[in-house]
Amino acid sequence: MAGWLDGNLVGFVDGIAFGLLLFTIAVGLSLVFGMMDVLNLAHGTLYLGGAYTAYALSDGTLPGLLLALTAGALVGALGGAALTWLTQPLARRGHLDQAVLTLGITFIVADLLAAAFGGEVLPTDPPAALRGTVDLLGHTYPVYRLVFIAVAACLAVLVHLLFERSSLGALVRATVADRDMVRAQGVDIRKVLYGVFALGAALAAVGGVLGAPTLGPGPGVDESVLVLSLVVVVVGGLGSVRGALVGALLIGQVQTLGVALLPQYAPFLLFGTMLAVLVVRPHGLVASAVRT
Amino acid sequence: MSTPTTSRAIGTAVLLGLTLAPFLLGPYAVATLSRTLVFALLALSVNLLTGLTGLPTLGQSAYFGVGAYTAAIVAKDLTDIGPLQLLIAAGVSALVAVLTGWLAVRARGVVFLMLTLAIGEIAHSAAVNWKPVTGGTDGVSGIPPVVPLPGMPALELDGLVYFYVLAVFLLLLAAVTRLGATPFALALRGIRDNEPRMKAIGHPTRRYALTVYCGAAALAGAAGSMWVSAQRFVSPGDAGFEIAALALLAVVIGGSGSIRGACAAAALIWLTRDYLGNLEAVAGRGPLLLGLLLVVAVYTLPRGLAGVRLPHQPSRKRAA
Image (cartoon, rainbow over the protein chains, first blue to last red):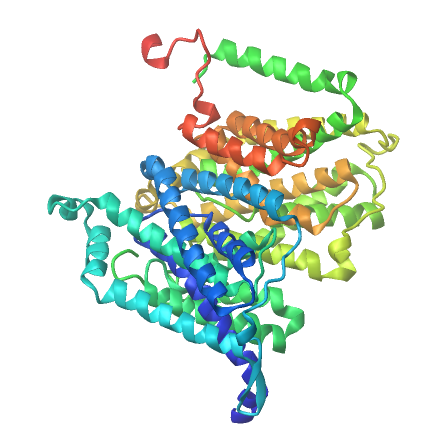
């Protein structure tokens, strides 16, 4: 086992990096659907917005990356707020109408972005300071990925603390459990909804900025990111931060180790995993505390 | 919603228009119209699952693709007789649906949506990667023109192929309409509206769901074989997410499980994407127009196209 892990160490760490990227993207989709009951199929578009922001602002320096992160978070938050505003009138009409609306928005934004940035995948380099490699137990490994793992892990902890440990998180969970009771206490429910959606969307866009060197901005990336996030959310269980993390880490390993070990079956592994999990646990690996 | 007379008048007008179209339109428009009819068949297949039974599917492109590749291979290696291709394609699609469907029908709602999405993505990956059979990203080309019935000449011209597609479309449309009036369709409606109650009064709802799942897959496979007859080409893009998403959107915009609504919405979506998007003024902006269409439709038609009331038509309340 130790020998096997040593031989696949790079793939394993890559899997963690990819899994944390998926978590950053998918947690917003999970919270917005699982907690706020809004099906947002434009989630991949938010990632794409962040990735293009990174491309437009990246100048190969660390301040450039920080600027891109700030701008990306802002773009995402605004996108999330806009999506809340657009989906609100359809709240009582169910998920299918939300699907039509958000897929329509996906088509529109993808077309506008392709018109602005062209039809190619644009290469986006990490800042010069993070471009080197380090020695990782005898293997060379890119610095950027390790930094990425650290940043994304911090984000995961922060999101977990915010939703599971803070009074704000308690308010959100209470809103999910009993909307009317929270409203009766004088809380503006719409503010909660806008807040959760904007935060989730900002995380997806930040994922886009950080992930641009791995999964660069280009046509079709929105769709593959959406499909990956949906798989993560379904495997992990809807509406819980822990579920999104477990699902993302599992899918991250399947995608990277799977491609390395069984390249000929790579496309089937992802969905095979999803099908297998759902047979055993129809509600995902971590069932949501409030909504099942 | 519409009265029998007006709806019959509209139906006759549409049928007349469809019949006369090849004499009035150019070859590109006729080929587009053939593809539109095929897409409407796929939308009818989604309608059986989503509109009638309440199972939202994003994976019908899988069975459409299985049918298309099967028909392509049958046409190249076995027979150029269209109805035979169609039957084999529908049969193979239904068979694949037995294997995949028993898993999918365990779920409901959004999880069903995700499972079918996964099935669709697997089919798409298979189309890309199973090169000896599917030709990979190059697809299958060199498909001989279809022979509509034994003894008839092969249909080389777009206009003649269109009539074959139209004939098959009308036959399958009649079959689906007929199915809608059976007790089985009532049971499916029961699953959509209140499955626990259906179960409680003794209906094996999961078996019903699997049956309609396989039937819808057979219809999607038939549509796939018509796609091959019309295009004489098939590639992985034909079995992709976009096709599946558009077919589901057609059913939602069509409104509340209505067969005519689904067909009308399918035509609207396909013509917007394929025809308007190629006009000179908006060249290449098909996705933008399509997106705008979807957004406008979802806000302005809360009950879908089927819920649109024609002018000068008394509402049901007033008539009663």
